[in-house]
Length: 244
Ligand SMILES: Cc1cc2nc3c(=O)[nH]c(=O)nc-3n(C[C@H](O)[C@H](O)[C@H](O)COP(=O)(O)OP(=O)(O)OC[C@H]3O[C@@H](n4cnc5c(N)ncnc54)[C@H](O)[C@@H]3O)c2cc1C
Ligand code: FES
Image 1: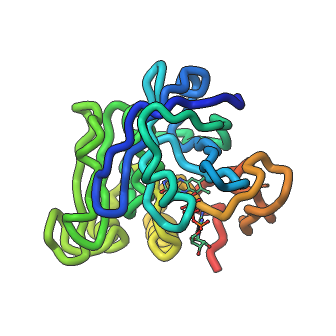
Image 2: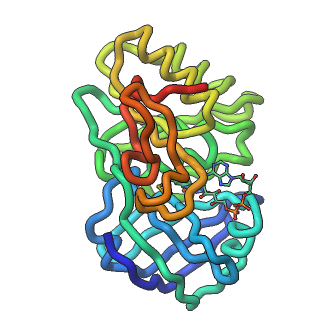
Image 3: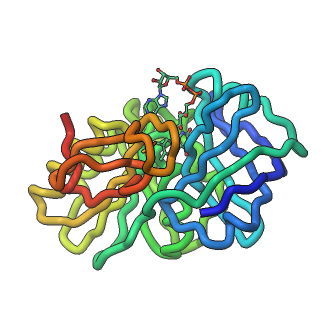
């Protein structure tokens, strides 16, 4: 884990609410695994914000960020050439298991899976959202071995339905599933994976303060007891997670 400064190379809008920050930060880019995150300074705010590394090469990382509150709104306006304090790579990333990988990303949750897709090289990656306008995955250049699919609730692109409905229709023996998205999606997927005897891993989100395992601000219940999303996760075995 390294604390350093990142130079903003680019800040591009992908949809109305989602933007892509490209940061020059070789010290972090070199060793990051799919599913790991960084803790990024937001100018004018005392607390850093956590974001998954959505893509990386030897020199730089890409973050895909949804504008949610004041901090992400400030980052949406950050200019090329700015410098931001950054800590990373943090947390435990995905550890792919036996089976053909199926990646399921709900909305901004797809950002937690894109570096995994690049590192796997060959996989199926389905992004879900309410409609075609919210789908941004094709704006990242994924390797040719990544087969991209879509699921939209209004049926405007790809499978008509949400990702749990997609999974109910498509989870077959021999798959290994990696997923990130809203809690009802992950809870529905957990039940389907259990029913069909398939293994998988989920990347979770929680509100964070320190990002380092010191404050217990990000604790979630698991079958092994309480776990810190920042240090013990954010990636957990699918059946470990306890949903309320
Ligand atoms: C490990 C990890 C990886 C993440 N990766 C990404 C990513 O790649 N892209 C991305 O857009 N976002 C990601 N997030 C979420 C991101 O950190 C928050 O959206 C951001 O910190 C919100 O900051 P803000 O100042 O805009 O909102 P705030 O003003 O802090 O909050 C606005 C509202 O959102 C709620 N909220 C804030 N953070 C969270 C959260 N983590 N979970 C649930 N509700 C929250 C608050 O309670 C409040 O109601 C990640 C979070 C974690 C823990
Ligand atoms: S944010 Fe402090 S322990 Fe996780």
